[in-house]
Length: 191
Image 1 (cartoon, one colour):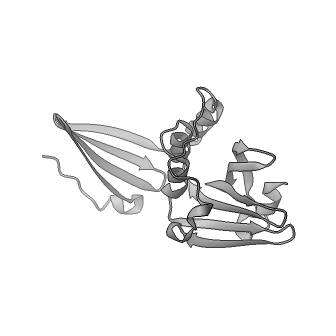
Image 2 (cartoon, rainbow, N blue to C red):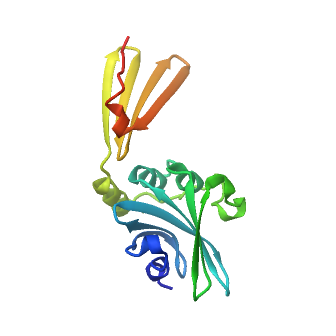
Image 3 (tube, rainbow, N blue to C red):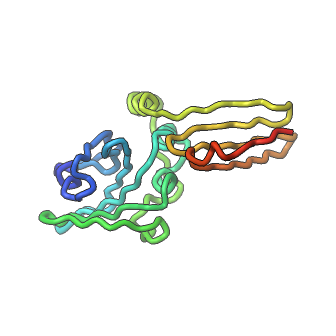
């Protein structure tokens, strides 16, 4: 089975390339594909004599790195970046692709809740290094006063501003995200 050739039958994926196989059996079960500048995470959720089914999502390198470092579950990595998901079905002759929201995907098609990659130490070292090289996200730490840290992170199309406040037993996280195009119109006031 050539996953690339199958996915290229979808008009929006004519130039898709299989990028990294994260788990495979006789075929790629969980893998990433690049389509232009975008990176997608795919999971094969059904294989039968009649058809194959995948669910796919646009993702980012931060999510993939956290997944491979066992920082988030497989389900969280899949549901994380965008609410729009792809349901792809192939019967050996024709392919169908439907776009749906996360909440519309049947639970049985999603990865099992609470499951991590359970990677052994060093198992994904090369993949993590590759994803870090490709990652064009930046993080700036600003310490305006002793009890609060502001973190400004640039994640490709978004800027995230978060305030981490630590007070003995209490950890309070507040996060504000907005599109880079709109960030110039925002001002941040410090105490």
